Image (cartoon, rainbow, N blue to C red; front, side, top):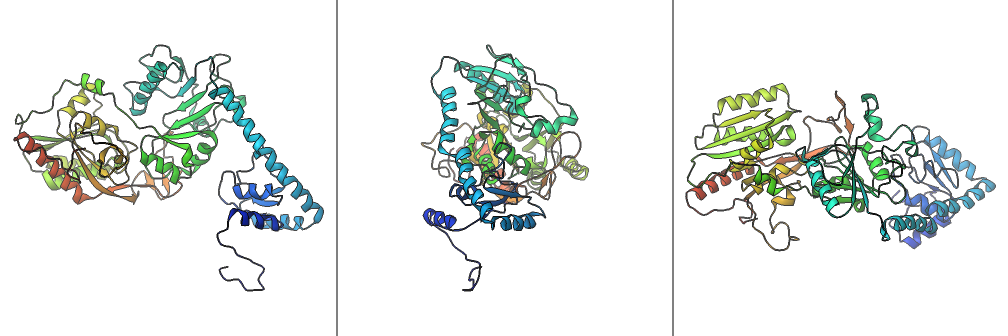
Length: 540
């Protein structure tokens, strides 16, 4: 191909300008586009048809669907073993002048009718008329998912988002639970989906969207739908309450490098903007095939006043306590790095008497019984470790535990954001966490690493970033290219776009930052310089 013979029937071209490419397309009789994996609208297919050149492609070409059937100037073949035979048959048919002339006539008409300027302007005119042009009614926002101030991280986030929407004068409705109540917010209970229908509810209703009855009062239509929850709902919003001009966004934290392959199509087709809580999440979306212009950043946040109001504990006063406390709180999961915490603690501080580790874990998933047994052995051997295992404590007790500690120790392998780390920072703890492309980069790296940050503001916490590198995830819940952590009960795996990845902290740097944080606390208690132990040696 690189150097065809002069008598070869194959002519190869390198990079071409738009003008040269248009001239080439118009000079040939047929364009072949053998798409073998699900794809969006193909510019190659459309460009060729717009110039009146028939196209032979496959059923995976997103240019065609139920509303834009293949057959007018284009021929779609199966992407499997019958593709070659179908391609040959189509090309032989196109050698017949009447057949080719009809296809060449239909192709530009198809492109103009479905993708032309008139169609584009018509679609956007509806949006502008319904949403952008000032109107008398309030903007109607529908949140799909539970909104609970004391719930999980995303549920709590959404409570404050909905509170802000009400204050902005929007009309807010929630399809889910709301606790506590918000004045002016309407709540609709979602329909229950049985176990047998769960995956249908995830990836699309069995019947067409326009036939799905609305659970809302007659005439209700949303301008904006914002989805959050786990597992994510990726099906199209029913036309019964999300019609022309309605825009759909989804908040999708993710921790394993690439999205499930089966999610990319629904996210592209049914969602206008995919929001992540960190720039790491945005990179995951783009690397998985989502258009960068259709991704957004909605950083997680904390209610600082509530944290301080609900904690009665105070930080250890300087010189008041000889013991320095490291603390971690979260699930007993491989991605949280519990094995790293305990193995490095055993290596550095197992027999220490002036330092202790409070390890608070809740739900458990991914570690084998053998691994958990090894953790128990470390705890038995190291008297400086307090393991609060499967301890579902109240918010007040949780905040008291954190505030009564000195150093938050979180050498995670993967986080979508890492909200407990930010809570610990607000309560004045020193924080040890990995950087190097991780979600923690957004708040762990100082001005020297984040040049776009204007100015320099000293935070309550001192930060100790740990160097880390991207690594293929080879531990549960990863299995080859699959990720196995999805409900319903039982082992459910999804194939990702590429092999799942996470981050491995540099163990030497973990120990270095542990020792630096401990030394800084001890110096501060002894009246020494309160030195920051991060990589740049600066306040952040």
